[in-house]
Length: 453
Ligand SMILES: [Zn+2]
Image 1: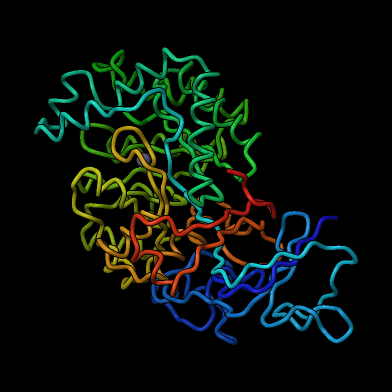
Image 2: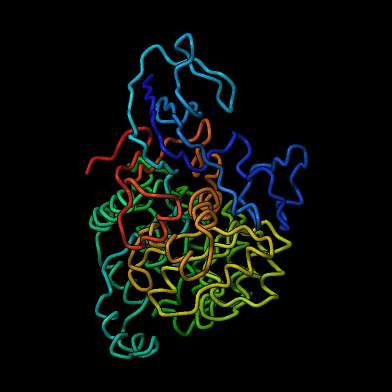
């Protein structure tokens, strides 16, 4: 048993009792508030919705005990009691282990690591040429006509050996970890062929096996219609349902299924059909919805009881109302809106409607070539007017729930992984999103050990 006692933490952020992921004492108007017990204001475990999103419980002058890579206890003040044991903690008094390391946090602000629930970080090549073309004024359609876009990524991916994909994805994953990501979801979707999709998912499986942080895999065969099927939509959808899904399920390669529900890609009906096929193999839906148009993606997600609907740049009241009656998490990807110079999702209206919001990076070569969640949190505050507490909750605990890891990461909770961010000296929590582009992270802890740079 390896234990580390971290003391002299200036501010320990996101402290929550076990089994109560959602905040206490803030009644939300959303679906999760309705299900919550009222005694002592405690909520059942689940993502934070509506007003609860602004509640980010923290302890000043705190300590934290890590045992075997997990949070064993935490509390306020000095950890040593009169008999050398721990003082009372929110979880009750617990004795110190016989042998432990001590670590002085020097007054640092300590946060749970970012939980990035939407990425495409397995890819074969960057698309900075298209980036320059767009600066010069080319439209998406013109770029596509020159062989760009998702189909360019698909061609490159199918030509690239699995080992090369793996090495490059590993480097990107490591970069994300250095930037504070402590759990991540990764999608396929640049294969668009049976072999290509399986190759991507096998790369993700290798990342899952070898990475020290939790990795979740999502099958996104329905990302675009490949060239070979451009006149045969039905043929490609059948390929996904009849060829890809059974093999993916047989090899246990995916945790979730995703569809790009968008004009020119997949319709609401096709999305539901593919989602239901995934369901029969135990894959819950996480959808690309309402990025460019009110495509019916939100409605499809709610019909499929999706874990999350992601993007949501184009939302009407109808879509907000639709989500209100569901347990589907609204995941916003402001990095993509920023990079594409698009309008941002109406985040405030969604919070005010009582919805649970998560934030993720959408790291991909075409529309968001960055996995930096610190910047995502800043963009959420600056461009979508989320409060720092709301953005941090959305990028930690709600991100964890948006990839089925709400009991594993995302808050300072007994039993969760000690995946933590130790910040450089900062004047306050609000300084983190305020000082956008500044690297505020001093050290990153993964499973109780500091990452080496
Ligand atoms: Zn995406």
